Length: 327
Image 1 (cartoon, rainbow, N blue to C red):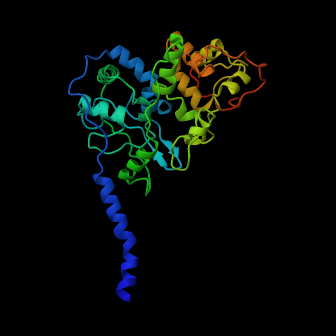
Image 2: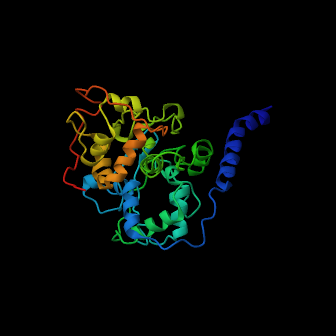
Image 3: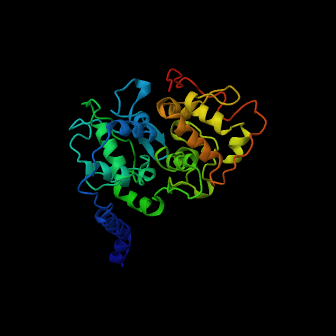
């Protein structure tokens, strides 16, 4: 009888250990091409801005070096620190191959075969072409190497068990739909590529469930629980129109940070503008606005409603808003 009791007492530990072992041996990712096209570093630098690489991996508030590691991100799962991705051979990614880089960016898998935490928005980059990867790779290789590694993540168990992320990937890892839609304008198609892919708007403007997966039923409906306590408002068509947005003034807001009622973006969006969309071409900003205000590609953009006297972002901390950039 005692033996049976002892068996039942240790059974959960045995099963848990076996499960952990199976997860650790579960292979993820696929082989990347043996050869890539010649990269264009200038185009890669633009893509790095478009994809948020610069804003995420640079601690601008601390005036840190470019791509040497970003500001800590406080989440319900722990504190994550974007790593150093300069070409330093020890502190950065200087020892990586372009295949390692491609696997990390498009698949979220480290050179050692471990899954990256989905705070790294790799799922939105799954549609990057080989040319995109080559361009990014060449751009990153032009950045001065920084010898100091970023601090490690502060994540407790069970989230510290990396192999457990393979279950998350199986449930929530989906490639973005960025294919061109026949019969729609070129700006709309370009906007779709940016919004659904590189610019990963859903990562902030869509709420997440208890497992950290995006809520499909609440796509673009806003998120009140961003890292650091920031919020992202709804960017559904009706809500954008209700706040007075048109293709023209939304495009201008992405350049200047100024809203239709004269207020300015605050919080996380201020950083997105300052470090990202303010560097976009006018055509790309217009493409994003076109897609957001006509996500179904009907060719019909609703007329804006009465100009509101306030916005969900009014009154927020605007200290991060950099108005000095002119494109």
